[in-house]
Length: 327
Image (cartoon, rainbow, N blue to C red):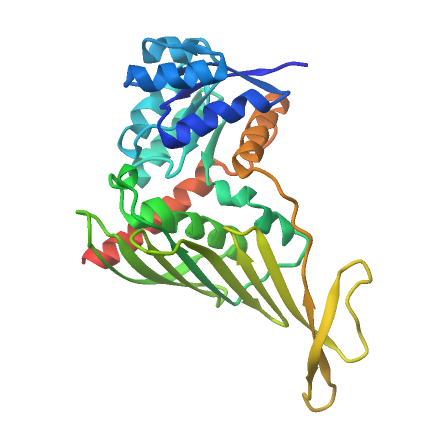
């Protein structure tokens, strides 16, 4: 079987996970790692039985594709160097530090016929995969993403660190143009925003309310989606989904879907019943699935699942939110 040769550039917390998981694929192999801290690179290379590259150029030249897990501030320069040498890139989110840089990378990738996938890993979360079978047409979305403070993420705001996951999912679900953004946020522990809330209104009438914090005692990664006759409750942390659906009195859920009737509603001419469904959630490693999708796209020359344009749109919205907070 043909395999994609991968170098991992940056083996801090997330990069080291990427390096370890690249050893588990049939369609890819890790050839080596590069990090500016030699001890970190040696530890990862020893763990994964691969090479330590002494410089960036060697890491790029040895591979067909690279995982870029360096600080956000240097995403652009590292990705640019890789793309100019014809290497496909899996870039951790956010794609770049600024929207303008993201658009430059997109243009560069087109000119060099290179694929870019961005690490919006929640798209591969088992909870998200479990609701794909439903016809999702959100009217209102509420998202809470709360985490404990981690010094390694202090180079970006909580909007770019945590909230951008939910921004990406919401844009993917709603599929409509944003017409207004209202946001508030405060700095608590760092020089950038640590707690933020944003309200997005879309052209099709949908509304999303997003809260993110990186100084919470108890982590939380939840999203609630409300639409006509259906309510979805997703827990990204526990990989759990609850679905509440309303059916006309003379209809029942598909026999293949585990469902429990919770009660009935008197709506005048025709009564309705409320059913609770618990979709089966497949336990998978989201980063592993993300990597597999990236390698498959390279080998088959098929569309990337979370491409650079989608990631740049999430970044553009994040920048609007930041502007609203500081102006």
